[in-house]
Length: 448
Image (tube, rainbow, N blue to C red; front, side, top):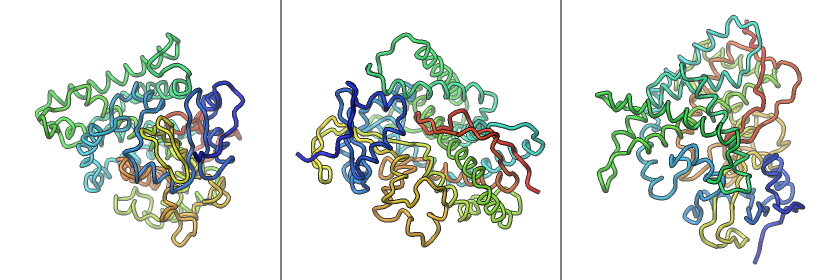
């Protein structure tokens, strides 16, 4: 049987300790061992990391029926999200995806543009007289949470922002420890971390169940995502979603709808603070096109230089840094024989740094995504650039997140420069999403 290269491990539990301590380093080591696929061992479980586009396409597009989400990561994530779109599988996932899809059609997303622009301009107005440095990562989290509440659920969560953000921080902070624990995901010792996780989930439950109760008491269910889910009926039984099903989808959308976007924005602002010449060039281009105002939806989607910068930021710091699958049936995966039960990982963070696909992969260079560039991810190379995945499980909110990010960046970058406070290295922290450890502290300086 043909198998990929084996990454050496000297510990009894294989690579589990490295996964727990620094998963980004583990996948970087795997990429250094082979450029197509690498085998690792997590206790008694074999895992493969894939770096070859044809193999990745096999898993994500061509043979999805041979892979499921029965991994430790998804089992752990279900403790927070339940059976929402991110964690569910099979026919149930397909039904929920069909229900949610209309809320993310282009026409539906376009009507949210004004809300995004108003929220961005409101934040910019509040920054005009800032004197002290701010954590721009925290500011982007609060902004994205407000937009998610207004657009997806018709709720302004400003009053609950601190509470919800703190609950998300605690829950995600426990994620990696749970995934890399030798214990089964459902078996939890009564530690302080376990209690904090349970308290965080209870906080999110209280906020979301109150949304559901308020909407059920209203005469009009609304046309936002919550309204669509409440009005949906099972095609075979005619049953509506119960409160628990609604809760799972809402928490999934609340987390996915603000956490990933906030991180994408924060990393983009960091990169521009580190590369002021690019920030100045981009600001000049935006001001020439928009004259200081927030863009309309059509304008936001026609800002080529900003789009190149944003795509390069997603390459270096993809908010979803890895995805996993479990093989449900032994079969031939490219030149290899893969056994049932094997974990399959695609690490976007490592893949986006593959020297076979990207010249000077650690360098910030938005021209990679300029028209005519030979680094553009086209054809099979599309599977070397996966900020929102590919195939039927591609992120349902990818266009929503892109539009929101472009509107916010276009609004802020015309009006402000960002200067880092001190010279502390800002390292990525790999939890469910890729977060800047310790935040990103900057001076916000108005442009003249």
